Length: 272
Image (cartoon, rainbow, N blue to C red):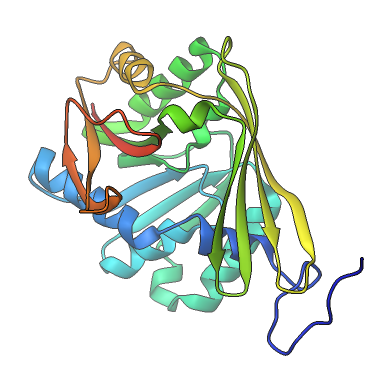
């Protein structure tokens, strides 16, 4: 069977921009920036101005950060030249000249960033799960520690729960497309996982494996242990509260217990 005729306004696999679809379906930069400010206020009693975003990708968080305050600056680090070019074009189209001047994107390895130390480093969207050996993860965390100013903070996210160990698909509908999270392969012995993001469109067309993630599914105890071994003096976990239906309510609090639920996302704040 062929694809159905395209109606006016429909996005299709041929016309879609995968980076734009990613931003719409995966990222919520407003919430991430809110969490950055919350963690700094609660733990340090102030807020930072200069941040570094490792694995910055499309720069959604960077754009939101410079919008929040005229003093805020961002160094975005990524190895993907294509996505960096896409991000710079997005920055140039959406931001003022002043805001554009406060974002710098560089193609560099996060293990060897050539830049001055900063107050805050971010590693979001689980990108550091790409370090599948413990010594590599520790090297990265140690590098971040070295690149932070005294009293600086490293903020990263993590996910888990019983569903994260299942080979399964999860679909979510957005305006004009369907996002499919495909947990394609799980090795419970090594923790090696392969996840894909697919996109489906109203005319029946699809973009299969728009994004591929070969990761190790790190647990929160492992991540906290490696952070402490890498020199961080204090590590705290932010856990999301639940609403009356048992779903996330968007309220994050420092927690030492959490909840044994099927799926969760948490944030980690590590202080130098």
